[in-house]
Image 1 (cartoon, helix red, strand yellow):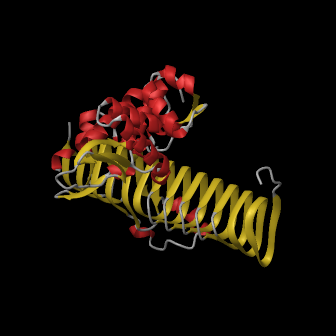
Image 2 (spheres, each protein chain N blue to C red):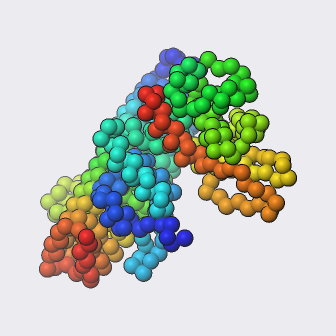
Image 3 (tube, helix red, strand yellow):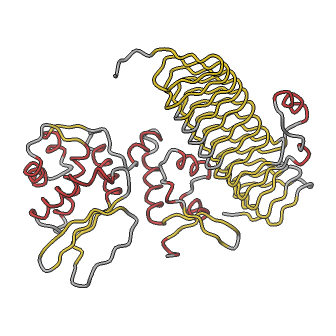
Length: 247
Length: 212
């Protein structure tokens, strides 16, 4: 079965198929795939559901996909909604819309825009998140860039360079075309238990502890404790209860 | 217990590494997840680490990171077996394990042309216990049999190997770690080895000998 030829799978309309190994798998319409799917390219247009694990070289989804298992893709592009019951692994993931996983995320390069919901940890080399974000575990990435467009919550943030702030109204205008969400942009604050990194820039952020080397606190922050080693700047429009220089 | 742990803040201060590095190493699995211990303190949640293990690990990473990429390091530090297959000659001449231990292994498993990492690990564990005088050659055979039959069930997990003696009879136990284990007073623990840290040690030795 090693050098088996991979066939193509096509589901058009309201239909279902069993999983397996394919070259290209295409779902147009309302598709249901039962069992694990291993394919080189996956394309979903419409509403598809996979009752098993997904493994794909490239996956392009326009519409929605619900994977009732794990998903592993080299390159994942989603416009619409991606829902996973298991872990998500990807090299690159570009998503505009909604992203939900009941487990953890591991990727090299994550660019997520929209309603983001991760139950466990989220790890990446670069993390770019815009929208309303909720991560119940640790967000761990070398570079973290977050723009909030709705009340967001990340339990812990850790990395090298961290930049968190409220999204600007102009790109928000662009966003609203893509998304159904945030009417509550006004209180688009990010709250976190702890934020730890080397180079940290925050605005509109509420955190219990911020620890870093160089910390810049912009406007609209509420921080209980900041511990820094090299430098600290705090905007006058922010509340910092306690500052400690370490080392 | 408190003395055995080190807070994240103290760790960074002591080793001079940055948050970025620590998180990067965590992502690359150079520091195992289970070493991150959450505790509530009066300032909220803080992360602690097992002091000795994390300090030696960070020292190791700092020493090796100039010569190897982080992915290579992760490979070296992971509890999973390395991808190694070497001939008996090469193993003998490498000096990683003693010829006595190899001979014992051959006696149990039959003559081998090539040794996989798992076999080398078994020989290495045996060798360590033999060298320290904790077990005899006969007991070594028991050890090899135990490893051969059961090690695959614990592969990739942290485990300890324990040798006990009671009234002159000895017995070998393979147990997943961390675990507390107690014996009756007449039982004596003859030898105990942590397999995961031995794997690490062996991988380093093999790498130094130019294998793997």
